[in-house]
Image (cartoon, rainbow, N blue to C red; front, top):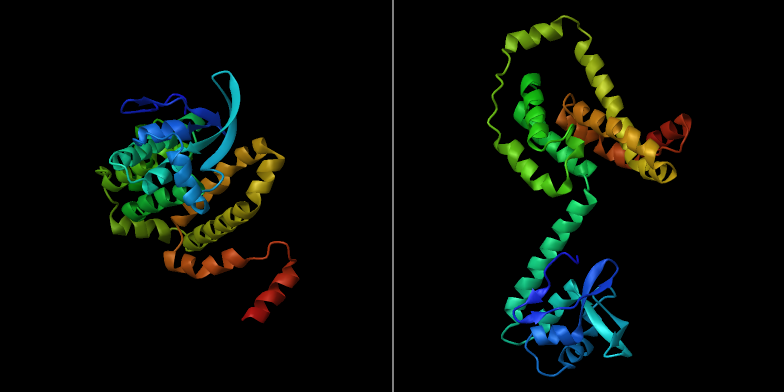
Length: 279
């Protein structure tokens, strides 16, 4: 946050660092909003204190002019709320400035943390590729290959969260070069082995169930051993992403409730008895 320019019009803020973010004193905030009285912002807060939380304002001890004083400070979100409650001519312009700074703060934190896309975001990317490829393996492979090359990553699970909106646009608008296979060729491949489709779908369903187990127990395992969790996470997540490609979406929707309420801790007999009672 310290790398962001914190000045508005003629007011150069001296931010107070708290909880790894910048807080503005009530005095400087009042100057930025055009108040002449030093206690103007504090009075606004006192009239509307029930609308503020501890993450928006607090009192801190600062040394000013050689003396220790307790001063009220506001986070950027707190500053925005003060500006919403303010009636000065400059308040509207100040609100826009605060939102711009907040946007830059979010981007900066994402870049610094290099946070990757969440499993839910990965699933959305995979759904786009599955929909646009319509089961064509060459198109499926081309889209992922070009996506990963475009963002300079080895696999799509490494995509940074900050690039997620761009990735959606890139996949949705990609000019696909691979040609669809002829239908009769696809049919012949399946007819080579009558059990092919059944075997693939069986593997896919098992992979999806494994991913559901990981969604519930992955975080506790991560706390016990981050390295082990990191080593297997992509296999569970990516495996399920590929499995979705072979599962009928209507069948998947029907199974969704079973996934959500599955009792992993029960024995097989207990689980069967529970399912029988719920029918």
